Image (tube, rainbow, N blue to C red; front, side, top):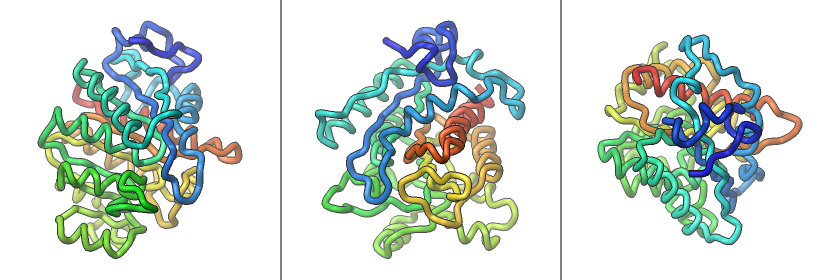
Length: 296
């Protein structure tokens, strides 16, 4: 399996810790953007994350380890969607993720717009049928179709709900009334950002989220879940979002008490005026990996 070298791989790691053979973790970059509806640039998200990762420290002081050297992180060549339809693009992502799971790799998928997440979700559900999908997002993404497409970024969780209703949402603060009906009718566990802020779940709201999760968890993380004051470089920002430490506290708790089997990070739209967003997204990926391997 071909992998990217030190100048282009995640964290800028030498071959000893980034070859396919020596790595337990594999990164799939899916620079897909065909259904965005407001801001553009998510196709540059994976490149922005990988390039910014070259400035992320190998050592995680919270976990007291250098995970990349313990487990190995292989970065695969970016997928090419130029001549493909939306459906064929998603099929390509699915086949790549499934192949990696078959090789017992822990797979991280970088987007691109959020529509890509249905592909790794499907692949992981086939391996872990009892999977809980944990969605960090400003938007419910439960529309049945949007702007004429059932594969829109605004529909990704509706497509996931066709595979499983075991979905937990965190940070939601923008949706249509039809999406609110869908949540109620299908018992989707949704932790609205405003409810979190107003103390509906008490001071330890993260524990309330954790209690809704099964043993195996797949995380789909749309960076617009964060407040735009912290993460401005995204296509559809919404005020009133999550902040870093409270989010990391939840992810660490999940990694410690549940089994995170894979994740994706999507919807970064890099702009030169906010390179901190790229770095924060890269740091998010590495922190999520550290939390995922707490007990591994």
